[in-house]
Length: 258
DNA sequence: CGTCCACGTCTAC
DNA sequence: TAGACCTGGACGG
Image (cartoon, rainbow, N blue to C red):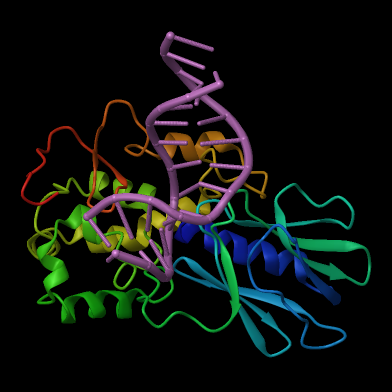
């Protein structure tokens, strides 16, 4: 998705765009297999909050939870000018539409709160995020390589494929080292789970192929900021989940771990 | 034309 | 631990 930084930017965008707006209806694109959404009132307002890789829309006291899959984003347009691949549309009483746009339709929505199976957001609740990991380091998932565990949303809510690559690379961390050992010996890993997503947020987020950035930020700055993910000078390996792990070629994959 | 790849979950053998 | 879920861009023949 859209990882932590992009979810955070999306919440900010929705809040800016929906400030003072009054909404009157919601429609789902029939091509999408997701849930039909009925507005809770004749007139309603929208505000957003993100946590890791989830976002809540607060709609008159109810919360509609979104995950963005590989390509989700929100876009406000004039009604009638909605973008291709808009799948859930919120219409205002003055001719605007807030659309959830998602080319690949992996994104989902549901009347729900935060998923309890996911951990703390390392940018908004850093102390809790650290404590949660420290208190559970004896858990067997931390036997796995650090490069793999960084995508585990129970502990690293919001970290996705480009963030893990940047965190490991900038922390000068061997991705194939046992997570428990890596976390004990290299405090930069945990610290960078906070600062690197925040840097990405301040740069306007990822501008990779799948995700059309709705904020109009120059893509250049972000691409220059990314040092590891997608860089031809780096090595890649398929992790056990079939995702491509980008890493500094100075490290050697340990076949018994990945 | 075809094959491979993509910022992520899910659920079903 | 494979697929399944999707569209589309890059690149090869």
